[in-house]
Length: 548
Image 1 (cartoon, helix red, strand yellow):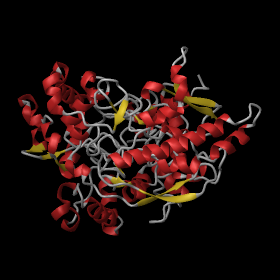
Image 2: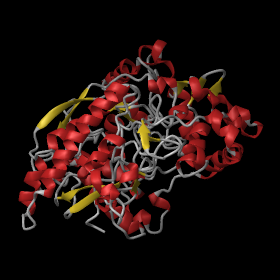
Image 3: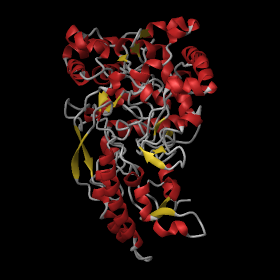
Image 4: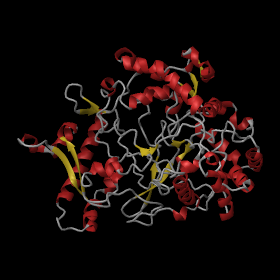
């Protein structure tokens, strides 16, 4: 019900999104769009150019297409013993052990071999359970492929069957063009040349797998194969700087105008873009499931784990809008791969969390285009984007609770130090003792509590103990403040009481970025690297995007 905080949490998952790390929780509220599988062949080709990854440790145990004679058409994606050319489906590019390993992992995440999987985390809580008591004990540990092969016939069957799934996608995942949809041609413009020129000069560097031949200074040496690893930021900067040159833009525009430009084009560069450039919500690139030592350790490459920090981003206090700097961690986090623009007309709303634009529920061409037109307008004219209802100075809106609610965590899920907040109630003969936080006022940012880990991920016992003491102090004060709110208090008064804990909660948060619909300002006046497009050029671009 709406007065349960879990209800409020689930309703931050906008239509078309899902937090796939909700069960094997990374303690970050991170609902993301469900990925369309389009033009897998072109995606694999792009991976073979710029998706070179190095495997190590448990990642070496992933099956590759070379292990299956029937998939020899895909056997050029692995060079023994440890080099794989990986296309990426996940937004942070963490699925970096090869397409087959990434596909195998999907079935684990939806319940395959759960008897082994759930030995490594506590569902919804995130911490590793004690095998005897199932109580949260410590940081999440990796599920290992070598162990799965020994304990799960289901996993072994999975590894044998997924090559056929990949072959199916390779043959069937074709684009859905507006021109082919019922009545779709009526929505298309006959004049597209200017839109092609704008796309080539502004968008194609990130949203095309066909680009002009790049100089050796950009793709040679340590940057060969994409340069993934510890030196990736240097390679990205070389590529990005080159795409700003007149030489690149002129050649790119000519490519876009070619009749065969869209043939075999995945419409994404597949390169990892730093969130410092994108300025989109940071919760997706802060995800930790695939970093070293975490649940999907065996399903991410060493070159992913070696990625450097992108630097600091600006985040905002959701109560008063105060900006502050936040240093993004290294080790794989901080990047987002550009989504494919194939069938863009049918996939709105936009951004990685579907927060940009209105979702039209009509299952029709008209309904899809209504969503597209609203979403693309807000993308290219940032001033049209929804602003926050309580703090309009923010660069977008915060997902907030819609009414007063309570967060309840059962006693058995609590780490030992937090059980003092429940105390003597565990001895009562009725009901299950629990930690209760509330009433959480209407208008509270959901992420303040949803992205709060109950156990530190630090492997050091002293650091974990210090975190528990700090968490106990913050939650104890918060519980006391909320219990003292008078029954007749207004929402504003209740939020003021809750607001006392906001700085402390932000300091403990795994993702203190709460504005969901900001960023991707390319081609607009909000992007300072290059001049923004004129309104006429934006309109011409929109007409071309409908044809993709």
